[in-house]
Length: 188
Ligand code: BTN
Image (tube, rainbow, N blue to C red; front, side, top):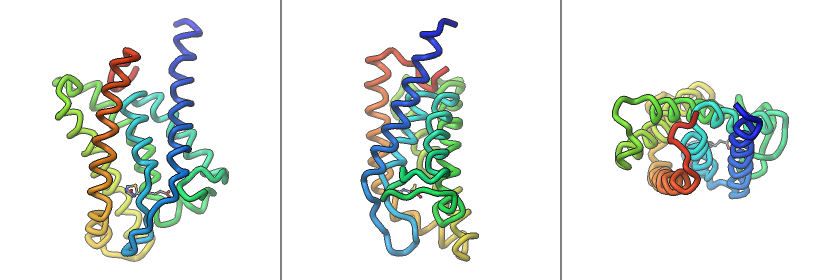
C-alpha cells in the first residue's frame, strides 16, 4: 500500500468529520415531548457510513464524538462535554458510532449487492441510520429519563418524517459522489 493510498481515505475521513461538525451549526429543534432535538448531524453520520465504509466511517464519527467528549462545541447548538454522553441523547450518540460499522458491513458483505439497486440501499440506510439509532437512543432515554421504553420509542415518531428525508437525500448524494470519485459502497 502506498502512502497516497493510506492518505486518501484519511483525508476523506477528515472531510466527513468536518461536514458533521458543519451540520451541527444547525441549532437543533426541540420537539417538546422528549428532551431530544431534531438535528441535521445524523445525516452526516449516514454519509460517513455510505461514503467511507466501516473502518474510515467509524474513524470519522469516532473523531467527531471524541472532540465532543473533550468539550469542543461540535454538537448541534454548540454543545459538547462528557456529560452529554450520559444525558438524554447519550444513546443516540452511541448509536451514531455504530452506524458506519453496520452500514459498511451490510453494504459491502451482503450476497445481494444492495448498491446496485437503490431501493435496497435505501432500505438498509433507513434500517440502520434511522430505526437502529432510534432503538438504541430510546433504550437509553427510557433509563435516563425514567420513561417506559414504549413511550420513549413512540416519541421518536416525531423524528421520522425529517429522518426519512435526510436519509433518502444522503443515499441519493452518496450514490452520485461514489460514482464521480469511483468509490465502492461500504468502503475498504
Ligand atoms: C446530540 O446532539 O446530543 C444528539 C442528538 C440526537 C438526535 C436524534 S438522532 C435521531 C433522531 N433524529 C433527529 O433529528 N433527532 C434524533
